[in-house]
Amino acid sequence: MTDTRSGRDWTMLALVVLVGLNLRPFLAAPGPLLSEIVADTGLGYGGVSMLTLLPMFLMGVGAFVAPGLQVRLGARRGLLIALVVLLAGSALRLFVQDGLSLIATAAVCGIGVAFIQAIFPGIIKARFPASVPVVTGLYSATIMAGGAFGARLMPMLTGAGYRWQAALAFLALPVALALAAAWRILSDVRTGRPDGTLTRQLLRRPRTWGLMLSFGLINSGYSSMIAWLSPYYQSQGWTSGDSSSLVAVMAAGQAAAALGLPALARGNADRRPWLLLTIALQVAGFLGLAGFPGLAPVLWAGLCGAGLGGSFALAIVTALDHLPRPEQAGALAALMQGGGFLIAALGPYALALLHDWTGGFAAGWILHLGCVLVTALIYLRFDPRRYPAAMPIAG
Image (cartoon, rainbow, N blue to C red):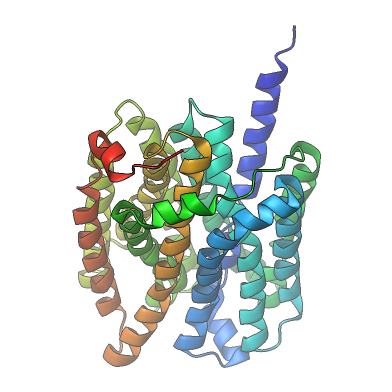
């Protein structure tokens, strides 16, 4: 007898992978092409930072807006529309002629991604209740792997003679594949109306704000690395291809840690030892970038990537751990991402300002080192024995 439930689970996992792979390439791709983009558009450091800041900001806003849209549209229709928006934003980059239009395409892509990543943690909790850490790790790993794909592909395409606009627009093709898969795989399921009372209860809990702050501080490091790691090493004489390899190394480290650390952590409800390991990795990586950039750049990129990717995945798992019911846990994870991405959006712009003030990127990496240490203090408070007291939710 065929196990139809198992088949549905595998196809849903395949969809999670295909969609996850498309959530970061549009962010990671411009970095290795920065010299060409600046030469053709005249964007300064502040303008370049908007290519990451604006989508991250929209991801934060989207986490608050997406639940209501999901009720009106349904999960299937909402995801399909979001993928069409992401597809359009990517394809429109073929026609970019100036900095403003390039920033506009980044915003369009960010709108599509905002809806997608706001609803997925709740779906994972509902569809895979016994495997939340592993499936969340897989989802996070595919997000990070997608960033590596986008960064590494760009120099290959421009080296083959394509304009940077065409190289960026090429990323519409894997989005089209994910769109086709979602059309075939995802069922048209509607969710209940968002519980405004639940949201208000969550926002009254200090733990919700702690989750937001820690998620935001860590992801500000990710957004800055995506925006500035490649230009940082290009300013030291590296080629576009070589600097894109560093971004790919960072993203590969993210993917490996995002997949591996939640799986290792699943045997213990206390995620803090693993969260603190991600902090140690980032401390070493940011110290190396700031103080010894030429000594072991691949190591620094890999350490930062592993710390950032592992922390991203474990943060989602930790938020989901706080509440037993999928709709409650999903709402908390969405709030964490919403507030967190609003904070994370400031990372690239802060580095741009520090670069203008100091003439280099080292001060920015030190800033993120400080953010990581503050996050460590917050992580220490995530004792699972105290989750019911930290998050007493009625209903």
